[in-house]
Image (cartoon, rainbow, N blue to C red; front, side):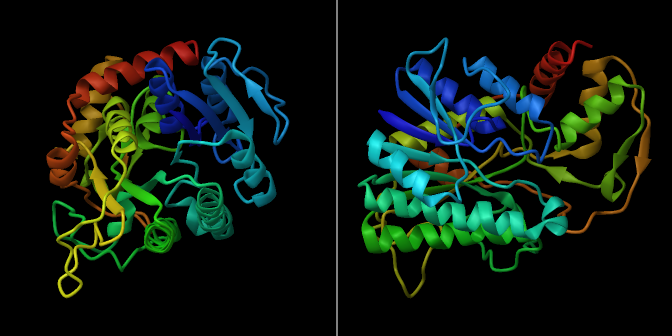
Length: 350
């Protein structure tokens, strides 16, 4: 297929693009390359894919120097005219939309960035799909949508009407917008609620990156909620496997859907929501112990209270993804952390 993958200078998008190319798909990558976190990591991901230079022009499609099936364009999702032109010229078979303004805590500081990228940008993607006949759309949602829900494991059948950050609210909005376009225009939309993704080329604002950076520099780490956190840490390869299965199996209408007793994760329209996680939550202190094992020494810890907008526990019920698409995450946490630490040492020459 010819697939548009947005967010390909990002963590998940860069890995997905590589996987699709390896199996023979043609990929057009899109990213704005903003400065939310260290751009060196973003440019490093692009250079790994054969897209060189740190002065990439906006709205110019570039050919990879190393992969004939890969091209990249630096573009703002809010630039609707440019996005429409891209869809008009490329005639995509499918879109996997992973670009977004990420981060729970940053949404407390800069809320407008989330409206621009996650709401306006997503509307532009939906409109481009509608106007150019793209019927296969998958997109990134987030476990953050579960908000104040305390019923574990989190299920797509749970109510998600009480988000506790604007980031979470923007992701819930994406799900609602997607359903509207599935219902009105027949676009097959699938949202994936990601649960704490980690691995090589990961985001510098995430715990594993921050902990590893501090530990290798001999500095203490901040451990929030006094370490009483539970996370469904999911290795990047397992996430990509789920994404590929979703792209290959676009959403179908739920023929048994009952409006009197609706299932929030499906619909009479071609609309689907899945959790995608490791289905095996890990205590934060055990996660830190695995980092200590990987770097070969203990880490000094500063215990901190729970941060605003954060939740103490996440745990994904992935039964639907297992039953419908045979998704089975398989990477142990220690193995995944070892691979991340090895990548980190290599990338930063430590």
